[in-house]
Amino acid sequence: MRIKMTTLTWVALAIFAVTYILIFALKNARPYIALASAVVFVVLGITRIFPDFSYSPLAALKEIDWNVLMMIVGIMGTVVLFSESGMPRRMGDILISRVGSVKWMIVLMSLFAGIVSAFVDNVATVLMIAPIALAICSKLEISPVAMVICISISSNLQGAATLVGDTTSILLAKFAGLDFTDFFFFRGRPGMFWVTEAGAVASALIIIFMFRKENKKIPPIEVLNVEDKFPTVMLVGTVLALIAVSFIPYKDAAAPGQFYKPDWTNGALCILFMIIGIVRGCIKRRSKAPLQKVLIGIIDEKDTLILLFGLFIVIGGIRRAGIIDLIGKGIFNLCGGTTRSALFVTFTVIVWMSVVISAFIDNIPYVATMLPVVRSLAAGFAVSADPAVVNNSATLLYFGLLVGATLGGNLTPVGASANITGLGILKAGGHTVENKDFMKYSVPFTLSAVLVGYVLLWIIWM
Image (cartoon, rainbow, N blue to C red):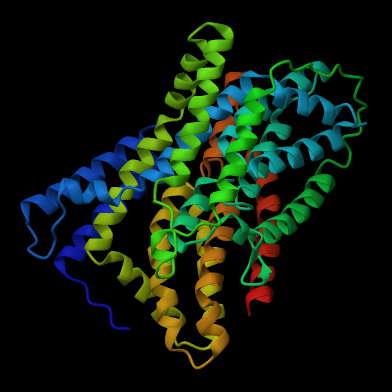
């Protein structure tokens, strides 16, 4: 594939590069950097400085995946009510009451966080479980740093297990037309759930080894009694509803004459369950407090929403400028050919490049950017003489992107929102964590999980 750079592509690439550099360098300003970059692309499109580049405000708004934003808002709101009910604390108490030592408490709290995160956004999972870890460590008079770090990276890892586990999974599912069950079994083969769980087992063994000397006994703990279980029902109902509608295809994936769901279905369901929970809570308590708490919880996560809002527009801009196709062609030329060995090189580049980049850039904007690139790469293998390459290249590369970006985001403190959230909780509790202290746990955890996922994906699909 021949790569031809024009003035437009150079300018668009420069804006894109500066955007990402600033996002990494100025963590607190990331959402507003994304918005500013989005405005720049729209202004370029309106002024028609480049005759071949048109990008109106209406076109920019159409690039935003409103369904994804609605899902995040709805799930976050329901999680706020779920957390307020005390059910996460009760679940943690039950788990801890069956643990004999600090070592196994860290291991099981990490696994517990991972299980929750498979069905709840990883940031919400950390917000639910990390405070429990702080309280327990305070009782035991030990530092909570190691436990909260393990909870954060475990939450980030397991977010790739299901469609609803993380924003990156939601983005991939919508882009590739996957439903909830496809994450378990896809085209008769094990899906991302099993690949992620294999990585979780490998990382759990790493945690056991690292904390092998932490054998301090845990005293008996009183299990919290939860009176209001309705928010738990709403959260479970949200997940079950998403599972149910996942069997209904979107319009693009539906056969002629087949019933299909609107693009906003998942988001509307999440919002609906959140509203039911809020209304019921306000009526039960005869107070606006549940509504206020949900609004505060969503506002606290506004940076994620603003960041995605801006990046959807930015990605639409670079796609219209031809950057996505150029990146795909560049990787394709680097790997060369359409053979199985060329696909292996491409797959390897996607996975490990994603690990490195996601270590420094939040995996949400990275995955959103790379999905069109992966589609472009997969299209290049459609002319291969090897049927397995033709049939499986897209799936292999999509799942490889998710493994590298989601699991790889654990490598550094700024690589994933869950890590940033966990460290923020520690800082609020008076515990400052240096990069080297975080990476002492995150590097072996991440490399073991990614390596297992990398090998399994190739074995399963090729």
